[in-house]
Picture 1 (tube, rainbow, N blue to C red):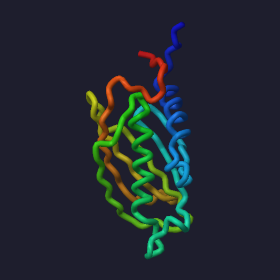
Picture 2: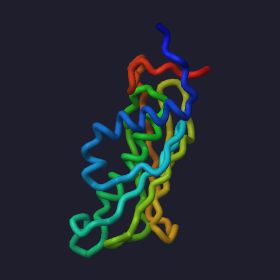
Picture 3: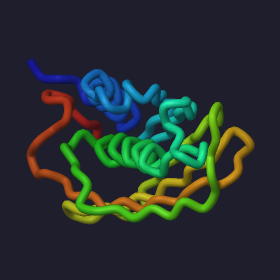
Picture 4: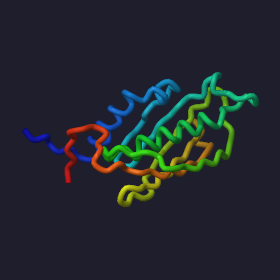
Length: 152
């Protein structure tokens, strides 16, 4: 019996569901997946008291983790296990207790096994908090969700 082919959006949604079910880090930090698509993702997270550093601002590691999670969902959305090969982040403004941070990832380049993804992190007032660029590496022949057929 053959598996019916799914369009790229439905593939991205199936990958989102499978990944998030096992993503204890993102769930534990209260992240929400607001949108997913082929090569793109939007995640949000509310800054909690246990995320504040000694200056009473959100620790940069949590901002980075939100961006990295968003990057992971975007680059795996094609249903091929994809890992980070590196990233850079610039935090340009502080975030505070109660701020809702939103990370939006877009696929800038995908060629062979490598990809480049740009992620912008903003707060609830749409003020820029950070910019993140991730580099990815796809593991050939290893799907995130086995037996998913992709429409061509």
